[in-house]
Image (cartoon, rainbow, N blue to C red; front, side, top):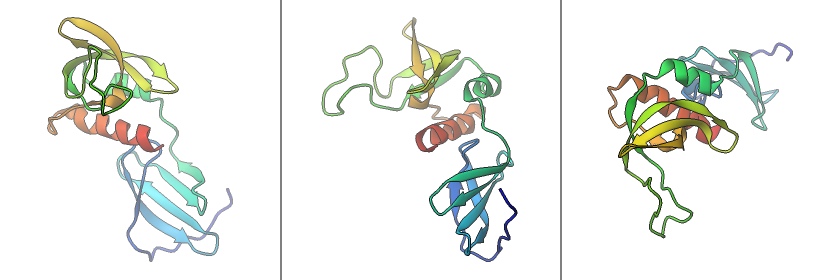
Length: 158
């Protein structure tokens, strides 16, 4: 990408960081070329979006979420199923795992193109593979809370 001049006078705006899922702040824009530059205070990434929302990463690299979360979350940890587990929210859930169930997350077991990072969870002495993006840590003081929320935001938007 060729060098562009960015103005630093603009309305405050933010975007979801495509690397870590945190909020990235608008730090410059080039009206002539319809470019906006964003910086993420969380991971240090810098990226530019054009008028069609095409992204060019200037600083940082895409994250391998499975590996990253294996290393940055402390296992096992308590979580709650935070997404409805059925085909239709108007029909009663019938499987062994249901919305709001409390589970214990044991470890990362893989990744799926459709479901993202898969983890092994335990409920009532049974273990299951489950999408991490459908889990939440309710305790905001838990060290893994922010990491998991950033991943969930990234998965839903990027």
